[in-house]
Image 1 (spheres, rainbow, N blue to C red):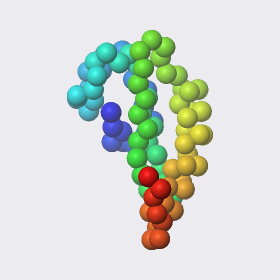
Image 2 (cartoon, one colour):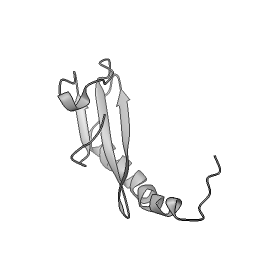
Image 3 (cartoon, rainbow, N blue to C red):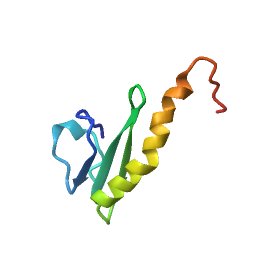
Length: 85
């Protein structure tokens, strides 16, 4: 699930929108949260689950959690940075 408009998105129930084509149809709730780095977009956090639906409070909590990490991600691509993976 992508977020072309760079806004957080919560989707419940059957997904019929063309932009989500190819998604698992058994998913009952999905959340897509764009990750903005210091120099622009660095990725998207996509979560999905069956049963309980995602809510705005969860989306805001996730945004507060990942925002600082996304902002720092630009530093990880600077010359001289080495991955430990």
